[in-house]
Length: 475
Image (cartoon, rainbow, N blue to C red; front, side, top):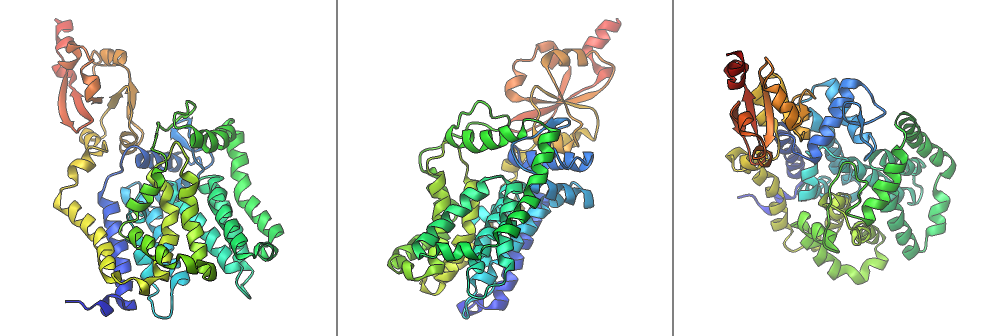
C-alpha cells in the first residue's frame, strides 16, 4: 500500500506527470479523428500541408475557411510536413502545448512544501484540459496565449521583475489574435483591470508596461497575416470580426454562419460546464472559495486567480451560442488555485487519486473495447479504409473525416449523378447516409452492394461487370 506522503513527493509526482502525458499520447495515436470539429481542423491542416498555402485556410480545395485564424492549423500542417498525416502527428502540437502548460505553471504554483509537478498533475486531471491534450482545435492555442498574457502580467508587476515579462504580455496577445482572434483581449484585459482596481495598483501597473516596443511586437506578430489573408481572400475580415465575434455571440441562429450549426444553450449553462468538466477539482474550488472568501482582499495571488477563473464564465453567461471548450482557459487558474490552498484541503489525497485515476480509466475503457462503438459511429475512417484508395464518392454530404482519410479524393455527387455513374464502365465505392438511402430509386439500390456501415452512414460498392443495367443494355 502506498503511503500518502510518497504520493505527494516530488519524484513520485514527476513520474505521474509524465505517465499521464504518455497515456494521452497513446490515445492520440489510436483514436481516429472525430467528426465534425476535430476532423475539420485536421483536414484544413492537411490541405495546407499539401498545397503549401500558409496564408488562406481551406476547408476544401479552393474553398476558403474564414471562421478561425491560422495558428493551430500552422502547427498541425508543420507537423504533417515534417512527419506524416497520422493521427499522432496531427495531434502532436496540442499534446506538446498542453505538456508545456502543465510544466510551466509549476514555476508559478510551487511552494516550499509542494511539488513542482503538482499544479501540472491537477491540470492534467481536469477532464476538460486532458481532453484537449489530444483534440485538434483552436482552443488549446488560445489557452496557451491567455496563459502567457495573464502569468507574464503577474510576473511583470512584481518588484525588480525583468523587463522581458512585459514583452511576453504583448507576445501572448499577438499569439491570441493568431490563435482565435480578438477574444483573447476580451478574456484577459477585463480580469486584469478588475484585479488592478480592487488592488488599487492600476496606475503603477500601466507604468511598468513597455507600450511602445510591446505594441510594436504585437503589431509585428498579428497584422501581417490579417492583411495577407484579406488581400488573398476578400471578405475575411468582415466575416471573421463582425460575424464570428458579434453575430455568433448574440445570435445562436445566425444565418450568415458558413461552417457551424445552431448551438442554443440554456441561460448560464457555462457555469454547469465549469462545474462538470472540471470535476473533481471544481468541488474543491467551491469549498476553498467559501472558506477563504473574506481573506481574498489580503491575498493578491488568490484574488488574481479568482478574477481569472470567474471572468470567462461570467462573460459567456449571456451568450446564446457556446460549447464546453469555452471554459478551457479557466482550467489553468483552477489548477493554480487548488495548488495554492493545497494544505487546507482535508481530502486532498482522495481527490488527487481520483484525478489521477481519470486518465487511467480512459485508457482501460479504450483497451477493453467498450469505447469502440462510440468511436466508430463518429468517424468515417473505418468505412473509407475499406476502399483501398479506389474511386470513392459520397451522396450529397461529405464528412470531414472522409475527406481527411481519403486525402481529399472523395467526391460529392447528387442522386442524378449517381444514376449516371452506375451506367459507366468503372467500379466505385460510395458513402450514403441511412436516411438518404430510403430516397434512392430501387433500380439504383440493386446495383450497390453493402460493404460496411455504422450508425450514421454506410459504404456501398458498385461492380461494373455485375451490373444488371449494363448487362441488360448490352443484350
